[in-house]
Amino acid sequence: MHERERHRIILSAVQEKSVVTIQDIAELTEASEATIRRDVAALHVQGKIRRVRGGAEAVHPPQLGNLAGRPFRVSESINIDKKRAIARAAVDLCDPGDAIIINGGTTTFQMVHFMSAHRMQVMTNSFAIAEHLVKHSKNTVTVPGGVIYREQSLILSPFDNDAIRNFYARRFFIGAQGVGPLGIMEADAQIIQSEQKLMHQADELVVMVDSSKFRRRSSLILCPLDRVSTIITDDGIQEDSARMIEDAGIKLVVASAGLQSVKEDSSSVA
Image 1 (cartoon, one colour):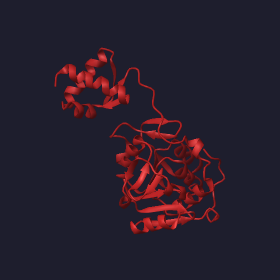
Image 2 (spheres, one colour):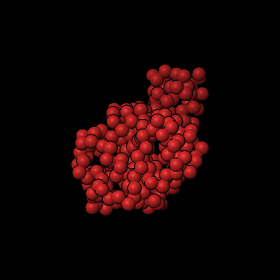
Image 3 (cartoon, one colour):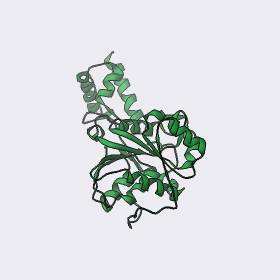
Image 4 (spheres, one colour):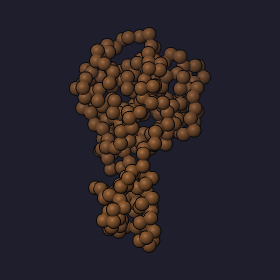
């Protein structure tokens, strides 16, 4: 590929993603990483891009688009009692010293209220979860590098060589937009990309959804049901949904919002 064409591809890539890695560009252009580094250096000198460690970024990055789905603060209070019960049951699965991953979301966020007495190794891509655990618990908290999406309180990384691949967990806790026969569904491709990276780092996938999620559908599938180890939901789940889960060989945990068997911490919501 001619140098001029490589430069065009590099400029187009940084405008689309704001930041791209040398490896990503090498794959796009089918050129060597050494060649791409020289291209990036040349474009940097020309003022067309900025050279950064391991890649390049746009001089005038495009505005980040909003992720699909409701903003965190909007969803936080919806079905709050059910979310608390589900979160309590999720924390009950954990043992002292466990290494776990908690994906960002308003249901998974409720786990923080039952983790103040724990000392676990926690990785999370949720700014809200990380902030709360650092302030109100003794858990060790790791976050991946990336951009903070304020409305969803998520940290999403464009890089493959971030902290995620160096963290191993026993369980990965996630919420979802919907659950159906074809699998676990999400509303945004960027969120799916982040979740799939995290899934590779855990032995078990635990899905935390209130019973309304079995009646919701999305056009994007995160993973098939056979990838899921456990689903935690509330006692509003219908018989056909429970049968679907059991037929798939998934452990079903039903939490009652009326039970307060686990003492919550008294700290305020982050």
